[in-house]
Length: 174
Image (cartoon, rainbow, N blue to C red; front, side, top):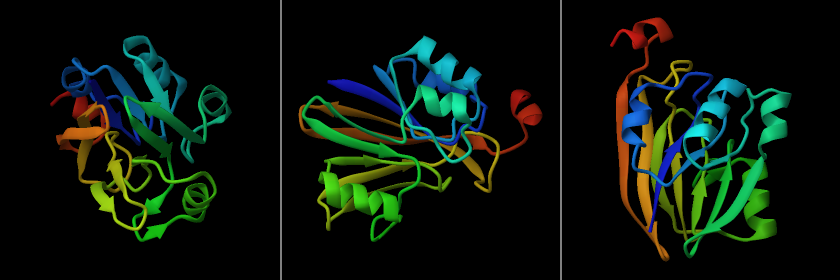
């Protein structure tokens, strides 16, 4: 069994609550728009990290991560990329990746700032977007996901609300 903490769109800010909610996870996955190297390095020092870069990430983050990440954990094949659209309305690069390299059991993305999980019947895969947990963007609530993978089973999925998206200064005073 592997316990996974999934986040996206930190934009250079790690909410202090993340340390509590991810304390017992085995790995952290970041689905892009990390924001700065300090954020990436803080996560790497804390837990094993799988990460893709997003559209706001600079050349340093891009050099330390990948645009598309495919891997197997337990018996589940995972595909992770930042910009993907959503089931039924995939962005062109995501659709091309699925068509050229096959369908994973789990598709992870970010970018939209909207937490959403959906089973895509067309591709027979679970699609996860943890929303955004930074304070930049249009989202109203910061969110992260936590779940487990045991063999071929993806289970115990939680969408955790960290609180309202407010400025970094106000957030540190909550």
